[in-house]
Length: 463
Image 1 (cartoon, helix red, strand yellow):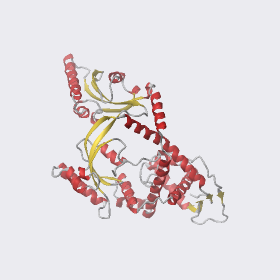
Image 2 (cartoon, helix red, strand yellow):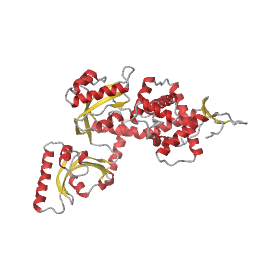
Image 3 (cartoon, one colour):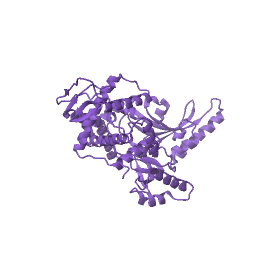
Image 4 (cartoon, rainbow, N blue to C red):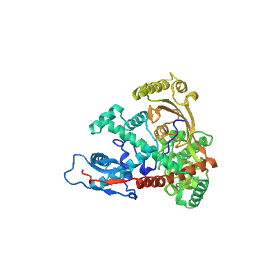
C-alpha cells in the first residue's frame, strides 16, 4: 500500500526538508549541531593563505569537494533567523559557525557516500517534497516561491537543498536499516526488562476515559438519587455496547467530553486514588460502575494499562477510506485540490457516494475496494496522513490533504479498541528495540563516514 509509513530517522539527526521555512526545523537543526564527538581519523590539514582574501573563498575541502565561505555564511544567517523566530538561545556567532561548518562537512561526506552507492532522487520526488513543504506552511507552491524570494533564497538553490536532504535521508535510512537487525534474543531481553520494570508502581501508565454526571454542592437527596440513576443508565448503555466516546459527548459534564471523555495517558500517581481503585481489577476496555467524588458520579473506562515506555496490550484502530489523486504534469496540485473539494461537497450533499467516487477516480490500489484501507493501527500510515485521519470523527470527511504520495480525501468510518495478540506485542517490542538503537546506529555510521573523509581546513570563516 503506498501509504505505508516510512520509518523515521533518528530524531536527533533527521534532516528536515523545510530548511528555510518549517517551524520544526529549528529544533531538529539545533540538535544536529551537536559536535559529532570525533574528529577525522584521516590526516586533516590546515592551509593558510597570505595576502587579502577574495570576495568568496574556500573554508574547507571534503574529499576534494569545497565548502565556500558564502555557503557557510548563508547557512549561518538562515539558522540564526530560525532560532530567532523560535526564541531559541543564540550561542556565540563564531561557535555557531564552527558547528555549522562541521555539520556541512558531515553532510558533504554523506552525500558523497550516497552518490557512490548510486542513490538518486528524481525531479518528481523533489516536486512532491516541495509540495509537502508548502502544504505544511499553508502555502501554495507559487506562494512558497514568493516567500523564498523575499527571504533572498534562490529557487534553484532551494530545490538543490531539498534534493540533498532527500539524498541524505535515503542513505541514512539504508545504512541505519542495515545495522538495525534485531534478533529474537534482543526481543526476549526487552520483554524481560519491561516485566521487571512493571513491578514499580510509578512506572504504570493508565489511559482512562470518563463520563461525569456532575452533582451540585447544594443538591438535595432526591436530586442526588436522580443523578445517580443517570450515571447508572450511562454505565448500562456502555456495558450493552454503545460507543463510550459518543456517550461521553452526549452526557458528560467533564472538560474532556469533546475528546470522547478520554483523559489521556498518565502515570497512576497522577490520577485520583478513587479512579485507580475503581479500575484496579479491570482489563483493557473494561468499564467500572459509577463511583462518587466531590464533583459527582464517574463512569470510568480503562482504555489501556501498561508499563511506562512498555508494550501495550490493546491498541486503538481506525477504519478509514480515501481517494488518492497523484500530482503530475497533467494534474497540478491546485487542480487536484479543486477536484477533491468537489468530490467532498458531492458526498456531503448526498449527490455522490464516496466508495463509488474512489472506485472511479482514486489512483491508489485500494480503489477497487472503494478506497477502503481496512483497520489500521497507529504508525501504519505516513505521519501527515495519520495526523489528519486521527483528527476526524467517524463519518467525517477531511479537506484535501497533500502527502508525499499525492492528494487525499479521507473519510473515517469507525474506530475500536483491539486487544493485541502475543505475536503483535512481540512485533511492537521488536520495533521498540529497533527505534531505541536507531540513534546509536546512525551516530556510529556518521562517525565512520566522517572518519574516512579527508578534510582540509583552509581560511577561517568570515561572517
